Amino acid sequence: MNLSSLNLFSNLQATNKQFAVIGLGRFGKAVCSTLHGLGYEVLGVDTDEKKVTQALSDRIAAHVLQLDSTEPSALAEAGIFEFDTVIVAIGNYLAESITTTLNLKEGGVTNVIAKASSETHLKLLKKVGADRVVFPEREMGCSLARSLTKPSILERFDLDPDHSIVELFVPEKFDGKTIADLDLRRRYGLTLIAVGRADKFEINPQPNERLRKGEAMVVIGSNKDINRLPI
Image 1: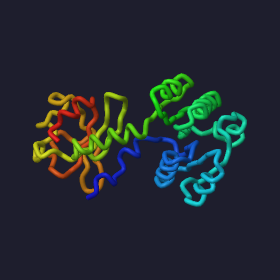
Image 2 (image 1 turned 90 degrees about the vertical axis):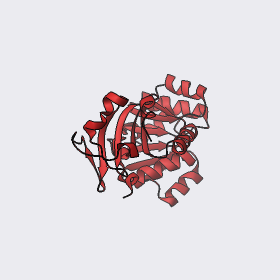
Image 3 (image 1 turned 60 degrees about the horizontal axis):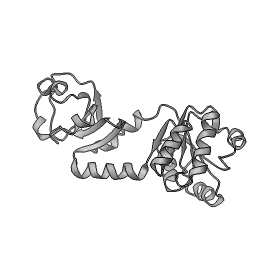
Image 4 (image 1 turned 135 degrees about the vertical axis):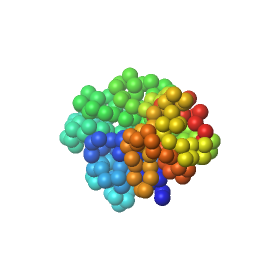
């Protein structure tokens, strides 16, 4: 059973079905392609005609437009202010990134996620109202380091800098023990929210259920406590 293919975390991360992605560089294209592949309706946007043409050719989004996102009227005319979530993927062009983010928030977009290329960029994006700022390169580096040191962790969803939801293989030390026996909340400060078996997840499993090595378990808690698990 390929536990990571169950896509538990992709189901948790979005409740709406429509996204706009502004900036079709490597990061923006990857976001478009992934969301589109998951079945969401995606609008891709860039000022560069070649990138727009390539995105259309690669079919990474339902719709692709060429426009200047620093112009509020262009965003309004394209209907981008109507989207619940817009991703600003213009990380390497600081002025354009900040102006676009400001335009989106002033236009009434509920959730604006912006890519930053430096700490200063992050602070400026927060100042103009970005709801979430991401460092793709830094996050990828952290993810790689975690996978090398904690190979049993299958997926990780960061709630904030200090807390996460993780999907991991049941440790050998837990094999054959019931959930009540493990008492994860008292011993580790963690809450078990699901167990993966037979190609599906069982949410809120019963205390008398036994865990088996090779199955998946999903816990929520502080990163410090998660790191104490016998992985």
